[in-house]
Length: 142
Image 1: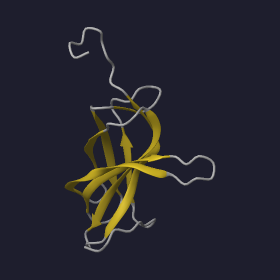
Image 2 (image 1 turned 60 degrees about the vertical axis):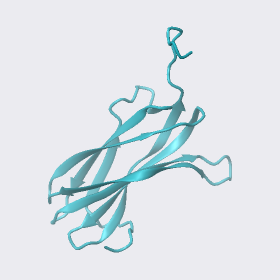
Image 3 (image 1 turned 45 degrees about the horizontal axis):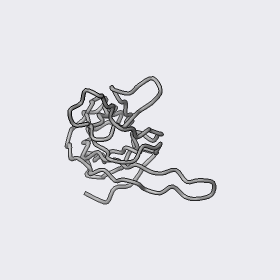
């Protein structure tokens, strides 16, 4: 396979949803796994393979400062084949241990064509909130 590239000509769409998200947006609870469900739609005439999924958290730049990466998540290998004209869903999960703050979450997938070309496709690019886990006065660890 060749090095990953991005291609506007690849007829593959990937979107991410968060089944446990609240009405007010996606919250990443420290110490708990966050689950993202990726929907992959292959409109190519040949099958594709979702090779890996990964992501990162970014602190959005203030004024004219560029964004700063806060955390890279380890990419997970999948090797899920999506036949031509079909759709598949895969689940990717990750954990955080950060100070509460709003960050930019990016999730992407490495997709291989039947010819062996590798492409990076963005699945999610949006703001999320890192929050502490709820506590209770009845928790013996308090």
